[in-house]
Image (cartoon, rainbow, N blue to C red; front, side, top):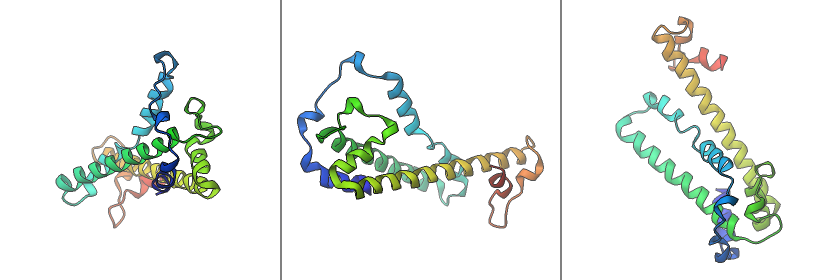
Length: 171
């Protein structure tokens, strides 16, 4: 939601010419770019571990993954259009630095401190969600390995709701 709001209020400030700048090949930080791509693709694999908990997985799962993919791509695209197109201090894309929270700085330039805080809060909630999905994935993997005899049997225990509680506790 913060990026949608940032896009709505920032779009009128976008200078289209700034979106058409092409850096020289040698100017691109390829290792940083590939690292960023890899980081942004993290946690998509955790969904497959939880697929067994989904009703009608053959239709629900592909539909949910497709909707999630479109939502994620749209969010990044909309935020980057504003981030690259808006002119302001510290907003030149060549100076972007992950240590500074660049999209939060874009939010501040476009919508003030409140939008910057909203973007940071959204990032915090996202990180919590990523941690919890990774924790759930690992717990189910431990439980599955225990079911197959590769790990101690106590890891296969589930709660009355079917949750692999031992795996969640030790994760």
